[in-house]
Length: 344
Ligand code: BGC
Image (tube, rainbow, N blue to C red; front, side, top):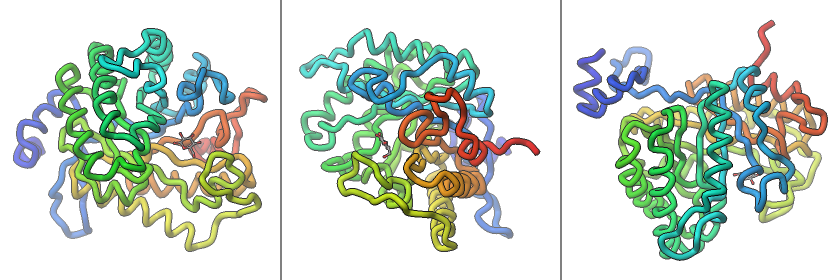
């Protein structure tokens, strides 16, 4: 095994071994010889703590992250939390684009709580809308923001992971995203040679643009995609979508179920082709949908991802797609059970 890893990935794989990264071997077909050894992502079951630190002020969108939520998530069987942060709203608009120490303080507290509970924590750059409409100006600013994040978290445990850009869209084309990911990785690797870094493609983080992308090959890079299909089911009654999707839409035809399995097969094929782990960074169904249908969709997504050994992250913990009700201080049992079935 050791020899094969070294042949395929050379010194990069040696680095992964030294770092204690377990590896999985993928068999593309029943008789095929294993030809890829791919680092095993540390993320299996993850929850998005969404709509907290990307809101204008935390709590304004209905949720404020709490220490006890980390314990609750760990006890329920999750291993990772993804923390969306709108860093662009907390950095100067002119060079050197200094990030406000107050947001660092808050994210540090959340990350400390997560790590103390034994969870991995993904820190991302969320909702950087100006980047999507004016990349010429804002790519530089994002690079400066990541340089500051990289320096700030350099000495933190490896359970803290970086994710460069949430759902690039608009003028952030595949070519631009690929080039920017490469530059950002070079920047963060200076201070964080071994940290896990998550990169995606263009087109709102959907799988198809990821398949067309060329992510940086690095033993500690994970690629990511989001999946909310069928969108008219998962986003029924949503108030923030470009078009309105009426409520009352169900889920569960054989075709819908097989589309989900096909998405995960394609993602697994991309992992095989690139040699990089792949991560379903967001999926979820809005609370306006029928609860049984939400649970059926969530279970189908989670099972299809796990069938292909793809780590996943449910969107979201406690707001519009909630798995947990902060009003009742209780899990929404059918959603939790769809994510992490209770032992019978
Ligand atoms: C956005 C959220 C939204 C979710 C589902 C996320 O990427 O940040 O605001 O609720 O997708 O649409």
